Image (tube, rainbow, N blue to C red; front, side):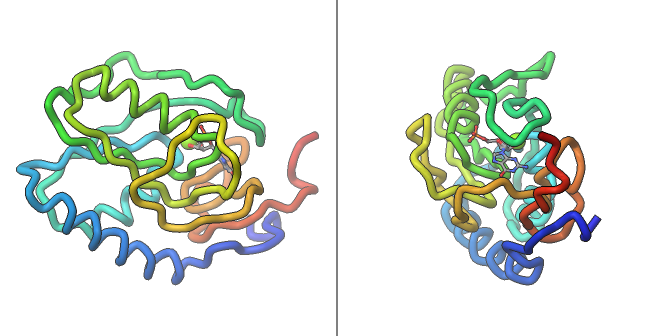
Length: 180
Ligand code: 5GP
Ligand code: MG
């Protein structure tokens, strides 16, 4: 699997150190919430969520949302689909929304809007990665672990065609692996 990676962009130790910093900020900023409600976007945010939240010693609840925007390729389709039969109850809660990466911005914007429409009091957002680019949807995350260049990456939760999510680092896929 490592053979398919052309270059490591963010190494495991670097991710771990940075998560300590982001988690400390989140812990401080949400310390007055009775219960923090976290909503993670599946499946990309799974690894980030697990490693981040174990560093946040607050009383919190975890909900997951199944959303699709990529449909197997390396370009966002431009449409955000909510795949769950039942969405979490967020009424009156401050929400910390987690995603793996901020790219076009459509996902975070659509999901934040949906949570507000469902009655959330406030939605704050945290992402592992943010691509340095002009976004289709004007949105920035409240907490960003790493800014990266505008290229397709995998690992640490991020997939290509369902694979590579379990790599402990973020890397760039070798072009020979990408189906044309
Ligand atoms: P956006 O809606 O901001 O364009 O994209 C967000 C979603 O697209 C992310 O949750 C992620 O699933 C996917 N995505 C965006 N860029 C990348 C990338 O470089 N690699 C992978 N594997 N997924 C990406
Ligand atoms: Mg995703």
